[in-house]
Length: 401
Image (cartoon, rainbow, N blue to C red; front, side, top):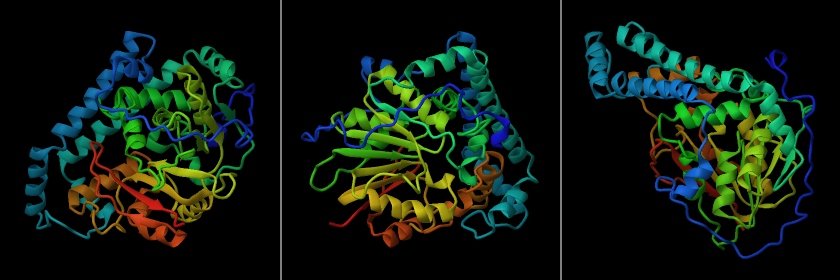
């Protein structure tokens, strides 16, 4: 897959940052931002707008199509329809242990379900196509914009185009063409698509990323001098941590060079002093005990279980005693307080996400005991029963003193 697209423009530069070289450890400043009641200034900072109304209109259509499909093809009336269908076949409508793929095959016999899948796939493909056209259609312009900020600040950028990428990083997650490593405009495409359509109107001003940063617990001693956002993607969450903790040293790392390159460009435009590096979550290159907070946002359902078994201990290594590991992702079967959805309908849609939305590792993550993995790595785990508008759960671990 990597041969399909060049990971980075040949002229991309690397600015390597010397760890700890320019940050004085001041008293922690903690700024509260309400993601869903932002000021006009905050909205202007977080907005992403296409160049033309035609481009925005097409993305608005994709967003509306996705909203309609989720509401009308998967709402209460649809659930009642599927339940009647299942009862007619003598199958359970409540909790079941029928395998995911078998649940999917059962509901494929239902024309309503088959149409919902087709609509979902078409809306997703339209979303990516419009975003891809916007940036690839003016490739020279957007490459030049990134080249102009590669070596400038605030903040820094480290690219490692010769880094050996694990296989799990090369899949086209969410069916995004080129994935996160194979398209030089992956960060632009990801950010604009998420803002305009992916979250279906719920992330127009970085609300999802701001929410994660604002929800992150503080260490017990209240000291937050260094933060690491792992699997940072296009870097939006990393910037949200810098907005909350403006005098902290904030890093974002990701295997995708195009993602961190875009994150750095965007941070420079926003005037935020954030450091981005193309590195692996299982080999961060940071010193022992360096960070007060290590956070991931939707990382672990995008990696294999063997990779996760290396990544979580790495987080423990680079956290100081009393440091926080903040994990924000979908639920797993290892969390007894929050059961994974177990109906035929729910399990069928999990399989749709796995198969049609190119989420190859999500079944393994869902079936894993992630809290147990955290405990094994040495964390004291808090199974926080937190429900937010994105229907996820957060877990945080503390590295014992």
